[in-house]
Image 1 (tube, rainbow, N blue to C red):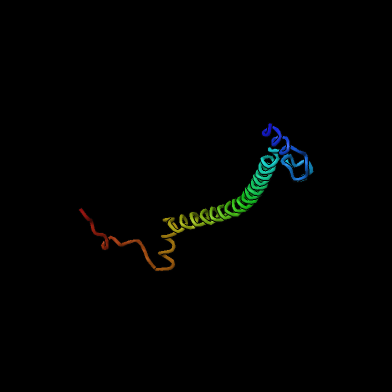
Image 2: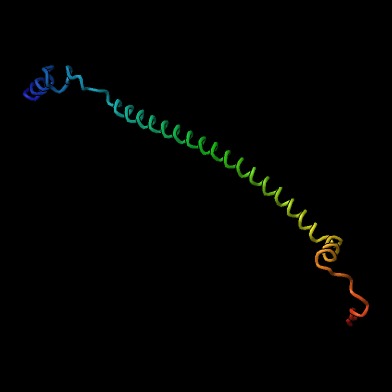
Length: 118
C-alpha cells in the first residue's frame, strides 16, 4: 500500500506538480514542429521570390543587351555593304584603265614593248 500512497501523492494537483496545470508555457507536442516547419517554408518562399525577381531583372537586362547588339549588327552590316561596293568599284577594269591614263600617264604597250613568253 505504501507504493500506491506514494503514487497518489506524486500525482496531486498542487502548483509545481508534474501536471503543470497552471503553467502557461505548456504547449502541445507538435507545436514546435509546426512552428519550425512554418518558418522554414516562409524562408523558402522568400528565397524563391527573390530568385524569381532576380531572374526577371536578368531577363530585362539581356533584352536591352540583345537590342544593343542587334543595332550594332545592323550598323556593321551596312558598313560591310558599303565597303564591298567601294572595293568592287576599285577593282573595275575600266576605272583602273581610266585612272592609269589620266592620273599616272600610262598607255597600252607599243608592239616593240611586247615580249612573247613560251
